[in-house]
Length: 240
Image (cartoon, rainbow, N blue to C red; front, side, top):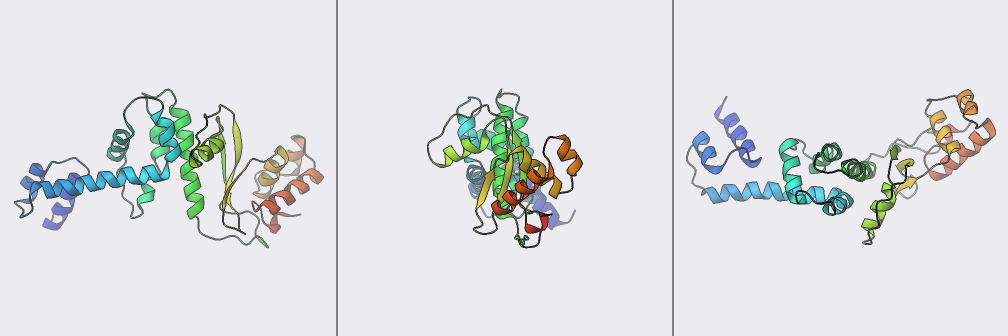
């Protein structure tokens, strides 16, 4: 390992908390900077972790705070140790957070916490998705992100954002997160059965025969397709 490689390996381990300042000095040799200066930068990394997750997951943080267990900052620190960020985009640090919450053995509400975090990160991803949809000719808006939850997660997240948190209702819900092409706003659409089937037909997952077996015939499917086109979920290329 070259001296430069050894430096970056040692600093990475130090900033992640695997080495203390004394161990870093033993690895790299003496430095004109006092140990406290090194420790400052490790604290800065930890603060960035907490800032990023608080920004991405405000509703998950609110739900977590009401259930006891380790404080939120300690949870973030544990997540950072288990899933160190290796992406230039700090927001990518949150990608594994929903699964991390779901695996918490100390929280009986781990599944619902994970659902809240999943919705919040999906919302972020849809917000940042590249523009690649021409509603005049394309079939499906590529930002559409189908989601199914055992709780009414979208309503809970909206209530937290409004500053008036409501209880997380145990109501199963299925819908689409997507960005409308006209105003570029991210929306949540809870479709009817006909619209779910129309979407599945547009994406090639099912055909008219399967839709009819589910109780929705072609005229209703066509009307549902038109409704999804107006909503910005599908493009005019989905019309038959």
